[in-house]
Structures are given as C-alpha cells and as structure tokens.
Length: 109
Image (cartoon, rainbow, N blue to C red; front, side, top):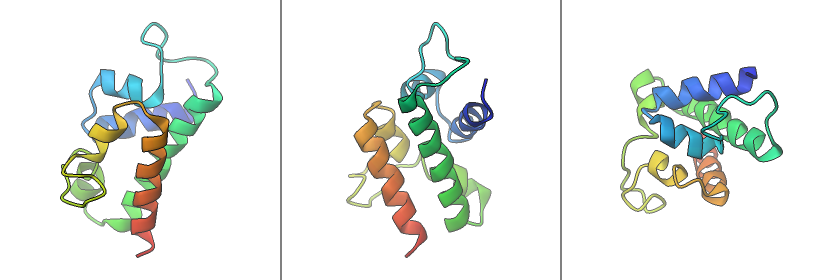
C-alpha cells in the first residue's frame, strides 16, 4: 500500500469516517481495498484528502477542530447545513474538488 493511501486512510479515520465512506471517498474496490497501484482518479482523491488535512492544520491550532471540521455540519451556505464529510461521501469527484477548493480558500482569508 502506498504511503499516500495509508496517510489518507489514517486521516479519514480521524475524521470519523466509516469504512464504507472511506471506500467511496477514495473510490476503492471493497474486494481489493488496498491496491498495489492506484488509478489516476484514486491518486487525485488521496491528494484531496491530504490537501484538506494540510489546510485544516494551517487554519486551526486545536486538533479537535482540525479533525472535527469535516464531520461537523456547518451553517456556511456553501455546505447548506451538511458536513463536508457527508458531501464528499457521495463519491462525486466534482463535489470533492469543490470542498477541497473551498477549504483551501479559507486558509488564505
């Protein structure tokens, strides 16, 4: 298993992600959840997780906020009262990219 995939899975656990959510978020096959080689899309998804975690670590000092942000519902109109984790758990790569972009934009505010 690649280091990036391992790191992404550890982050997802810290975000209180279920195993099924992790499979969907990273587009992993339940029959082979730890592939030797990741597809281009799987690499992109791993990168999104790593970038979101990095951005949240920059935005927040408190580890509870760093790891709790993704699973908490937000009043921000961008999330419409939902949690970012709930939104990316749909598996929609476009939504995942937008969440990543939104969190990155929070970093520079």
